[in-house]
Image 1 (cartoon, rainbow, N blue to C red):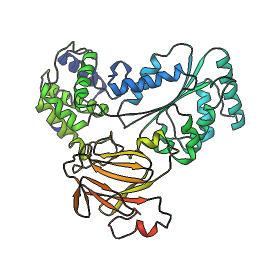
Image 2: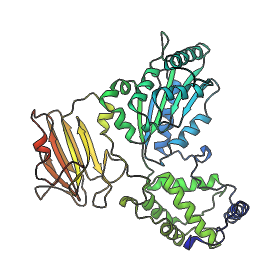
Image 3: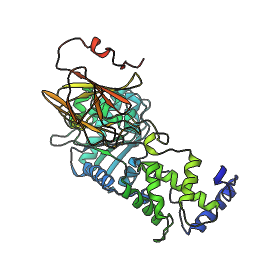
Image 4: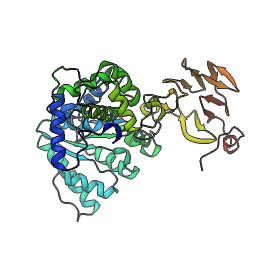
Length: 432
């Protein structure tokens, strides 16, 4: 463990228990404050988390409750779900699915298992008939039935179509199944695909859970310490918070990892407070760089579709862009009427994880008859034909330099073959 060796470098289970006891005793806490496992009592309700939780609760209030919650890995989706489940009333019957790499029949069988059945000898028609009968009986008995699917980004289109069919089960007056889909941002890409248009039209609310702000990061740390028993004592020096935010980007799971490692550093030095020396030691131990460089990211996040396409998936495509770096196309994105914001942080519609990109670097405004790219007062600007521009009307084949990346615009309103356009000598080529 290098710099973090010391009192906590104990190997046997008995020593682990003793080490935990000594750790809690030193910091005068009754629980470990930064465990990675989801624990509802530690939930910190930022404005974003409170809104997502309210959306979940709305599935119970409304008979057509179908809600989609997305967020990056470690954003707190699972903890929100666990908190929501703990607060449900007794008249709500819940099926919770966490294993989502399933065939359509296996998925339906798993739902039935959650409702107390043993369906593994049933064929699909019998599974469906059993589910329909169960849902109808629960409705007749005055109970609400809720299906929660976590890690829903792993569901295939065929399974998502089964979800759509289940959402359509109804009496003469109302739907009988409420549904919450929670997953990583690529779930939005799946839901926005043309073959799932019918499913998307049934979704009443969609919400993307973003990372904590700098101020919320400090409040989050203090909240978890308070729940663990700090009783208002300052355990982390105030000057550590900006650095913690800089290296975690406000992602709760990363905050937990860094804070726990920093506390272990202080524990190894027999101190009951955490200072910058401990945070720096933790960063070296974890081998992290600043969050924007991507080395401490839990994954390289896929890029979401524009928010307007989430809200209006039926709007026609005006154009598309290809994002490339070093001659390799990284992503292709359709442009529909609305705004697409491009920048370094996860709250953008298109995220470019690079130190040469500003937090909110530029935006593309798409209308039915035009697309315009605008600089958002970025540090490094945007360039067209080696000339820095503030605003540029995009024409078919234009290449815009953004940091060390290129954005090529293709106008879908021009009815001609695209092969030549996509392979002009711009340095942009499809990834093989």
